[in-house]
Length: 345
Image (tube, rainbow, N blue to C red):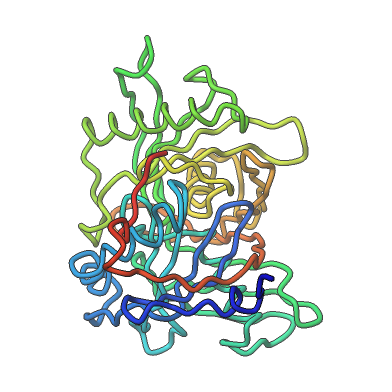
């Protein structure tokens, strides 16, 4: 007779790294929050910690993001010590290609995790959480009701339009592309300009075109962050189309190495707010609801004007919700020939 308790109490190998995670999703986009077992990183700043992680422990990123523990579209965040005295904690954002500078869906999920778990005491009806990210300090606010977080909003880093361009070598005619920054640089393209409809069953073509446009922008344009050279790159392509419901529009973001965001993309809608404000499509304090391929929604608002280096910018506010879906305790064992993961897609 099978002893189910033996299965439940399956022992861990005596050797190897054991890493504990919390599993969330924000609007369908996964977030694997690494809470214990990851080696301590050297460095005083978040960017220094990110460089140390890349140099010494990148195999753990691939182990946790790639198959068989993850998949080509897995996303994660590693909790680290904060950089600033008034921040609660710091984060590194992880994906299949490397490390993000900023991630809105992750901020929403990790804020909810911190407050609902009690790691940061809940102060109903709203709890402020200050997070050090590679792009700067993020102030997030968890809205709660009866000890449950019902939504999270955060004030993002200054977001701005970098420029308007035409790129060739994708379609028969050059494609209009707007480069904007919302914590990362994106190439924004109207879906109709590439004869694309933003539906889940079009995911393969969305990814293919998103990759090609990103590669062409990287090949033909020089992107410069005003202050951090580490952030001077195109992170992804965002396709935009109108909707026939009460939302403003629909986003489909292809980032990193062909990852397709299931959420509306927090940094992406921040860049959208900067574009629409510059083009006089929206006013300050005017909320805009943007949906994803799955119909999940973020609300973005241009709160105020500011400057960021030489750029006229806005401070965007992004609001959404996340959901807790489980816990994991992974083993990364050198006896396993595939311990560092792989991707077949």
